[in-house]
Image 1: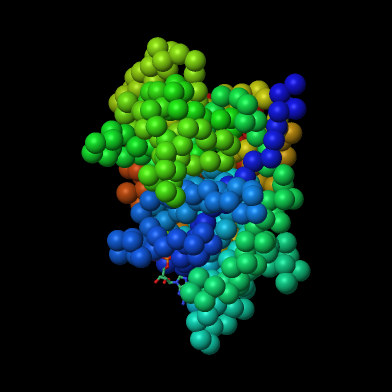
Image 2: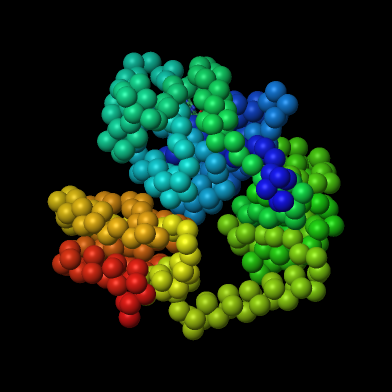
Length: 411
Ligand code: GTP
Ligand code: NA
Ligand code: MG
């Protein structure tokens, strides 16, 4: 019985939040390294992933950039994580990329722990940031809610033990498991061409064990694992990587797309065939002849398959005024479908932006625009990424369309 082979695996914990709120500094402090000082302009531009050991058990951490240009990387971080650490600088409170990070964590359906950081700044009033969190649906536990807010300073180290302990408590409650005895599968986080090495792909194993010599396919990339290196000590070669382990992997023929899933096959010819068919597909997609890549209300029914499990349709809602949003949300709650859960990732007043489109692409969402128009940049990005923006000026038309879409009747 394969269930018998499930064993505890390290939690994957991702740091998300607005630019410069202290994600990298906190993580540096937690694992006792110093990445921050080596970053150009002090801005994280990569997705980082490290595994450390604490009292004999592994913990994996993923650091994401907060700059607005990196929505896609934050989404990737959220997609591989078990727990999201939302870093909020106490002097700044909830900012645009904090809100976006909350949306990513919600889309990923993972518990959120807040690190209320920079608590060392003289005269800081943490209440303001806590009120912001509350207004964004994250009610701090000390105010009777269910969100743990840990006050931290990456500079003085205050709250670091508390943060780690809180994360381990959440992890213990969830008992993450995987089967190390099966072929590996996981996700590529980012890749680059390095002179003298070929393609170096940073991947995280999510199930099974990945070994040197394995044949892997990842989207339109494939190859045999030639070598793997530890992400904290890039010189340290490793022979095998179990569940939740990030590694730098050598052996792909070409750089796999970030966020693409990888898996292990028995046979290199088969891997090549699969990768090449994916490559053809990608070429056709880029020529626009195969239609949208992402979910639309028209393809929703097919996309969901006719599965027994409850599945999710992610929505991003934009409207002219607050009142419209509330009215639409109320209508949406009446759409009670046995197999499909509607999840609103973001509901905001104002026109559709490029950021909305990136979020939709990253989390496979449909954008509903009520009495607002997408700006030109958002529209062309949506075309390029195959994201559907549906415009409405009557509320009941939204619910009618969704009902039809859920039945596969929308043409
Ligand atoms: P991006 O990756 O660029 O989004 O930023 P980040 O969230 O990783 O923040 P980073 O760790 O780069 O820190 C940004 C700045 O805030 C740096 O100058 C840090 O020294 C400073 N900083 C981080 N944590 C604290 C803190 O707890 N207290 C104070 N006073 N400064 C902090
Ligand atoms: Na920074
Ligand atoms: Mg950073």
